[in-house]
Image (cartoon, rainbow, N blue to C red; front, side, top):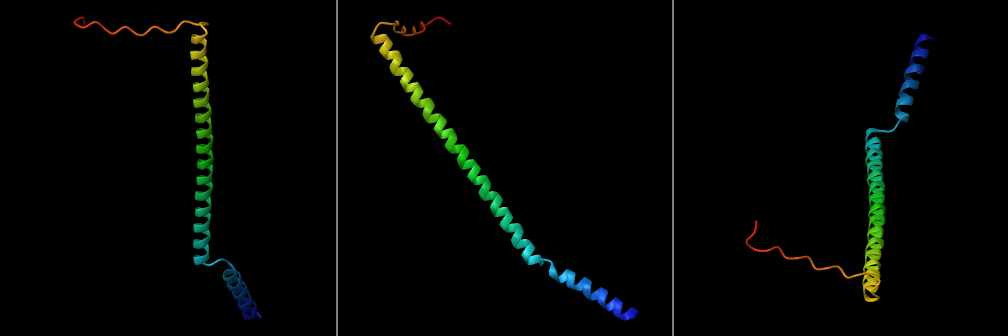
Length: 93
């Protein structure tokens, strides 16, 4: 009876061990997970770049609109035109 119980226990342990994933399967899963993480990071970075580009575009459009409004205000004589900066005199340090 002891021999039968020992054989059954050994058989059960061997059966449980053989049911798990093999080393090759574990390595394939690790590689797939790594690729998935890299793809996710790339997607996040692309979205961040898209947002940054959008913000830069809006800022550039606002700068142009402000410049046009400033020139329009000068033309309507609502504000004075800025004076040109004086060139430094030669010879003085």
